Image (cartoon, one colour):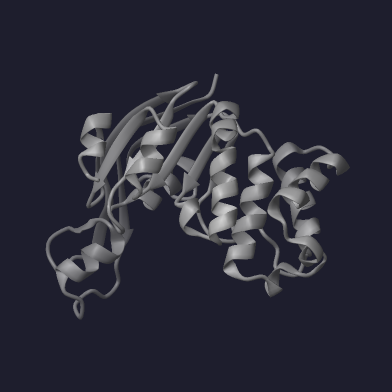
Length: 239
């Protein structure tokens, strides 16, 4: 049974030269807080965070830009390792966090679809599945071109379209509605209920209260790297 367990998790990121930066400016860039003032050598990006997620949990991570939302998702996905506490994850994790993650620039769009599917499932790609993904992302003839020729919006279409057809156990999603054109965002929004239902655990980081309230049942408020669980009513009060 898939689960995520975070116990007193902290993440310290080394900073090699912050003397020329004001403390407040640096904190806003990292989402954490400097330890020991502007001359400190580390920033605490996540500070003493704990949560237990189990099968059926849909979790919205809320906070302003730089509050630590994306950093938390990177911890849950294994991109970052905690410097304090423990993170335990059981189940296949599918992170959609960074633009172009998992893509090979010199491969075509279709080749990247097949590559991602193979890496995640370990099985030969189903041609019908590739066709479904190609139809959904609406990239047409661009799927025959190397990904290095794509715009940022096209890369997000390709990555997101591929992952949502993979029926992940644990899906970590970061601010996807803010990327790409309006029509594709509406199409994705129409697919969201299906995505949430297919995932055993769904974690969605966003600063858009309405989207979090629509698709999640639990909510975490991030502030300078510190996270606490809040109610739906408290979330809505930020509108």
